Image 1 (cartoon, rainbow, N blue to C red):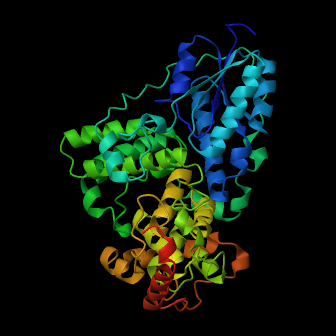
Image 2 (image 1 turned 90 degrees about the vertical axis):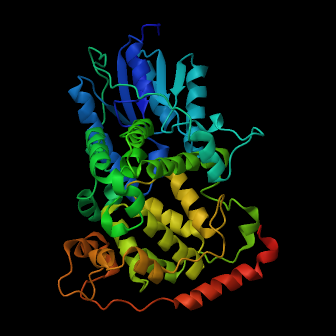
Image 3 (image 1 turned 180 degrees about the vertical axis):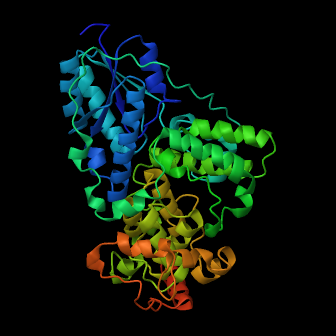
Length: 475
């Protein structure tokens, strides 16, 4: 291997050409660039919807590379077991990738880097899908932030820099290494018949993400702050899906929103703060790698949450008898996404009214979301449950009925997703029954279920459980 050997550019959840530090550096190196995607151990661990969505993102990204005269080499296996033979096969001198900040990804990358260096192969990583890498944001005492407000104050005025342009040309080899076939992986097989339903609601690829951002800036940003909590109004950007797979960089979104703010857009400041929450989630997960598996506040380890249970299964299937909760759960099953206000309501209902462990909900979201973000998912569940950093007060128990009256006053959202009881239910509501497993035996003609528990009863039961455990809890 020589200094002139190719660069292997390892893509993961960063399926774009613009503002990609690794791709920019590879193209500026003057070497041949070999883009590769590996169906590795971290892909295997993803939920069904996330794997399906990743596969579709890979498909679109491969076409974008082909349009540049390049290719995406597909290989399957443990990352280092794929990269080491590929280096030997191609005579590559260096492997580039963009950094990740979750514990599983860090462990994988650390092992890969060590294995490459042991064989004299250079490995270089670049900043990944955050505005500010977690170790660069410190408290006055030099530690990590655990509360959002001071974190936001620390980063709000920082300049993340200007986005990098997409390369005009990606240097290609005369002869390409062999690639596996994406369809042979059956990466979305676990979605079964639901894939066809969810596909109608996915917006896939860098070009689509860019168009989505442009549309939001011109049509939605000005009303974002006022309408974002109303799920029937579709006032969000929708970019969580594209940010999750790196089809657009947070820096591109941030700088666009900053320009809109400077031009006087009413919703820009609130939108920027929500990007700040995304950053804060990754900051927390990096500094507290068990955020998705253990109570962040240790005093909660003895709290009497139930494990998985029949009530939780009714919750998963959107059959709790609480229309706002059930509408949200069905929205997620049909679209792969769920409105942010609705996420708080369904999480509160599961962990408080049903006294079910937040990890049961976290795992279901992980399986169903096409915008699955491991940091935001973990932080969100622990925040609502009360066991996490910067948590909602333990006694805050959202009432799904009063929330529905406030944020869905005319019932549009609930009717959109619940077919039972409607003479002519919309296709959105009916599509739920086309997406769910046939083994569930659900029918839109069935009567709508009675509530699992009275809301007042569930609230009192939760408060009693908190009071009983108060001595051991960090209140």
